[in-house]
Amino acid sequence: MLKTVAAFDRIGEENAFAVLARATQLAAAGRDIINLGIGQPDFRTPDFIVEAAVKALRDGHHGYTPAVGILPLREAVAADLGKRFRVRLSPDEVMIMPGGKPTMYMAIVMFGEPGADILYPDPGFPIYRSMIEYTGARPIPVPIREENGFAFSAEETLRLITPQTRLIIVNSPANPTGGVTPKAEVDRLVAGLERHPDVAIMSDEIYDHMLYDGETHVCLLSYPSIRDRLVLLNGWSKTYAMTGWRLGYAVWPGKLYDYARKLAVNLYSCVNAATQYAGLAALTGPQDECARMVAEFDRRRKIVVAGLSKLPGMSCTTPKGAFYAFPNIKRTGWKSKPLANALLDESGVALIGGPDFGVLGEGFLRVSYANSTENILRALDRMGEFLASRKAA
Ligand code: PLP
Image (cartoon, rainbow, N blue to C red; front, side, top):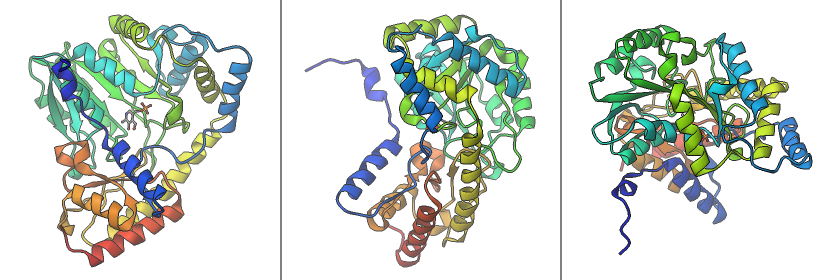
């Protein structure tokens, strides 16, 4: 018998990938499947970004780069954050990462160990809890409530801090709820955190461009009092429709930067060179395609919310960010996962059950509107027919 370390038995998963695999399998078997389960834009990466990667390869950029990323790209990230949030940032605080997830992994392994507590949103991105458990730290869920518009509550978060708390994870705009936390609430959280100088914060801002109804993004970098313990997670996956390129960035404070650099050297050496040039083109080139995507998501968001709200037993809070709706299904009589499974098997609509994002996700479904309006309307019709004709299992 191989004797592997126990930590590996504690690693969780992201069920969205399992649903995608099952949906793909059903489609391959000839079923007409509408996928509202996956968290990636249905748009192509803009052509000028693809061309920049091709040119980089033709120009000979096919070797290793510095582990922290090429300087022009780190400069571009610092300039972009500086311009959008009026913060002063050095490129030496920015590290180019192979996607958003590795920042989460690194931050959690830097603070997680047996005896430590890490706070994370529930419902929230499933990898937070998975990685906290992997490290042996205690995962402490911060409830994200529907009645709060799926914003996090500063008071509830602060109340959960104990002397064991090492790291707090926040995410706005949020997956899976589309919730956006208002600036006043973030102000309150930061003011409270000033009383806990030993607690680090990881702010996952990967959906920072996807805001609606006049919301503006609140970047935690703009709070000087926590800058020396703030890890910022962001990247290109969602904003530029680049999920498969694997490109993200982190801002690491103080000695964490060097820890992250060493982890990169040990783990993957550097991010794919051509991809970094694509990221540079994305940040420094025209932003209109990105704005068009957001406008299209906004249009679909309204259709999805209106459609879901009309389904028997469902209600839907209007999400203010990302590209997800998180309808409440409690009055349908169904539990979330049986409903998601039945909708896929019987109606060919792929969605994710709320409990895949935490225990407080029971009674909800995650609906991604990163699909065409036509498909969204077909999916809503099918869901309506299903709920009208089938009794809860
Ligand atoms: N953070 C959140 C909240 C996400 O929803 C996702 C992807 O779904 C990520 C991070 C990971 O992004 P990436 O695909 O760049 O690793």
